[in-house]
Every structure is written in structure tokens, then in C-alpha cells.
Image (cartoon, rainbow, N blue to C red):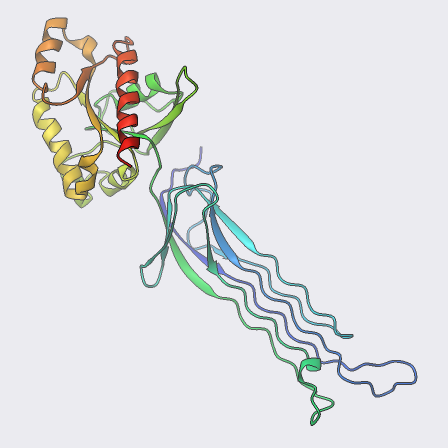
Length: 332
């Protein structure tokens, strides 16, 4: 499996325009015909386009030059050169395109088919036929082609998912994702098993579907780049619903919940306006009475205790997700 890549800088260069042609008509009985040099073809453009065929940016290469084809030169008999082929570089939906020089956001390619022209091909040069005039019947010069645009662009992927799982490392997010969806994330009993975002798809009985993202765990100071830091936080900006995933065996999960909220708030106030639910995981590790007590401690929040391993209250969680997603649609 290729390495997950969510930020990369590439160089793009549009094609150079073809040179104009210097040529004169030469036919039998017409030894000194007029100029008939054709124009050069336009250089190809370079565009970026969002395609669902790609999940991340790992198919691209850092600092590689992606270039379109040059235009072909003009020819005699007033034949124009062929335009260079355009180049389309495909990126996953959710990719921000940033100018490498100024840092300005050029485009946010959110939906399939979103497209931006990032380098325009150079104009082809005029052939000598273009310069013929009453005072210059036999011009012996033509224009060279114009160079195509070249620039560096930074690509920044922010995953697009309907639901984001937010929690500390080893909170059971990956196990929950594998139970709720068709995903098969790496699962182990140590922190930071999830080093990259994982996506899964939920297919409901009514034929509706939605995506859930398991994001690398937060630690205190994540908004300042500590731990996996911003590589986590930027991937939940686009989700519609948040599931605060907390290990029910944690000594003080109320404090954990506040830490999670605090890190999101420091990164962006808007994150805490999204519909959310507190999911207490690993409920099979404590008794039923203890589960009720711990649920009561977060009664001000919409909450549920589940066991992904034992499939406890998973159907109830599906129902909550359906409701939260409907709420998110209503507030759009």
C-alpha cells in the first residue's frame, strides 16, 4: 500500500507555443511566390481536477515537474502548427490548491469534476504570411513561440467525510470504525496505531450511505502541532457530524471530553457547532451498573455506551448517526 500523503508541492509548466514559419510559395511557373509561412500552435494548458479515483496525494511526486506538450511549429503553404496536448493532473476531492509563491488559495476542489487551470499554454508565433503588407511584400521573419506559464503549487488535502471519530490515542476508534463500516484499519492495544486517516462506508438498509473517518488521536496541544497535530485536525474541518470517542475505563473521561473540545476550539470555533455525540467505548470491560453510572456523568451530552467487540448498542448508534446527519442537513 502506498504511503498516505495529504500535503505535497509540485511544479507545473504549460507548453511553449510553436514557432511561426518563414516560407515562400514555390510553384511551377511562379518562381517568386509570396510568403506562406503558417503560425505555430498554442502550448498545452495544465489543469488540476478532483477525481474520486484518488483517496490521497500519494500518486504524485514532490517537486516533480508536470508539463503539458509544446505547440508544433508552423509550416509552409499556410499550414498552422498543431496545438500542444493539455495535461490534467487528478487529485482527490477535498484538495486545496495554493500558490507556492504567494501562499494564496487558488481553489478548493471539493466535488468530483471541480477543476482549475493552473498554468496557461504559450501562444504560437505568427508565420511570415501574417506580416505581409503593401509595403513589405516578402517578410523574411516570423515570431518565436511564447513560453508557457510555470509555477509551484502546494496541494493540501482535507478529507471529506460525513462523520469524524475524535478521541485520544487508543480510545477504540479504529475498532469502532471496523464495526460500523466496511473499513479494515490497523488495530492494536497501544497508542497511535492510527497514523493516517481511515475511511469507511456505512450502507443502510434504506439504501442510503455515508462515510466515517477515523482520524489519528488527539493529544493536548494538537492544535499547536504536538503529536500528530495539524495532520489530524485539518481532516475534520469538512465532516458534518462529530463522535467524541472516549474509553469508558478512563479514570476521568469528563476531563478527556473537555480536552477534546478544547483542542477543537483552539483550532476552529466552528468545529464545536457541528452535531455531535459522546460514544463511550469498551463497555464490555465494566459491569452494567457501572455503565449506567458513567453514562449519567455525561447526561448533559447526547451519549451512548457501546462495545464494538461484542456488538453492544451498535444499532442504537446507527440510529443516532442517522438523526445527527439529518440535523446537519437541516442546518446547511
